[in-house]
Amino acid sequence: MVNFYDLSLLELKQFLVGHGKEKFRAEQLFRWVYQKGVTDFSQMTNISQDFREEIKNILDFKLPKVVHQADSVDGTRKFLMAVDGGKNIESVLIPNEDRLTLCVSSEVGCAMGCQFCFTAEMGLMRRLNVSEIVGQFLNAQKSLNGTKRITNIVFMGMGEPLDNVDNVTKAIEILHEQVGIGLSKKRITVSTSGIVPQIHRVAKVGARLAVSLNATTNEIRDKVMPINRKYNLEKLLEACKQYYLESKDMITFEYVLLKGINDSIDDAHRIVQLTKNIPSKINLIPFNEHPESGFVRPSQHEVNKFQKTLMNAGKHVLVRRTMGRDIYAACGQLRSEMEKHPQKMSV
Ligand code: SAH
Ligand code: SF4
Image (cartoon, rainbow, N blue to C red; front, side, top):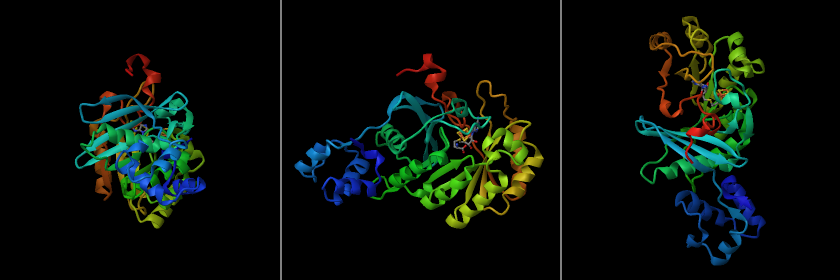
């Protein structure tokens, strides 16, 4: 059996041709499944009985199973989904004015070891396959019962998307497919800690790029983000420039504010210097605390001062509102909750 959601349209065509079928059937199947939500072959009325009988023995529609769903008072909704191997991943739906953004995971855990990140403590358990990435979107969309549509996707959940770049870019192609969901690639953002050699893949697939900068000197970045020891700030910013040259898309620099570590006014000035030749905006994320992290969130006053310094230098800068804190869905708080609080989960 092959999982339908693992296949791009092109791969489905090749798969069908390999089984002696016409390739236009692939488009029919994409429409039924992604546009009409039909996975029961008996309901696919424009497909011949013979074809349906044969196809159901070679294709299945397995998705991650939603094992828990939690709604925050602020409208954020978190999903815990079970994937093969007894592991769980998390996705978060975030409403924001006219947008409805889904934050998806790319891996179970993460190998990057960033000091401030809760997911890092899990280590990397495994990379998600394509159907598990696309499946997060389908499950979340289904939970809305046709009342709303997801408008944006950000790869800012668990995992480092560029450590799983083949599957992430293939999932983006599937989500974008015109005879399927048809989501604009400009509404899909891939966030990376800085796996420099893979950044060009984001430009190639046509998605937007977010880079977790999080420090302004190699000395501090080496400490809080070990990936910096391999690809330092100079290399990272050079790759960002290349991304811009290829895509002509503005980059988002994310900057987690850690009290006393990277939140000085000198840091703000250095951000301006580092990003000055890169069309970009800055997203400040006041640190979201989690048990035993050892880091502290700066006060609102300190955050405002930092933001002001950047604004006065002409940078476009936003402070990311903390969403879903009551359900443990904020940035950097994701970790399969089942492991940490087994007694709290209801399945
Ligand atoms: N691995 C990717 C995407 C997932 S992390 C990356 O690192 O970019 C998504 C964002 O959450 C990153 O910008 C990361 O720096 C930020 N983050 C991680 N832990 C955090 C925490 N405890 N508080 C606030 N932001 C955090
Ligand atoms: Fe991984 Fe991103 Fe967390 Fe770093 S911040 S450990 S790259 S998920």
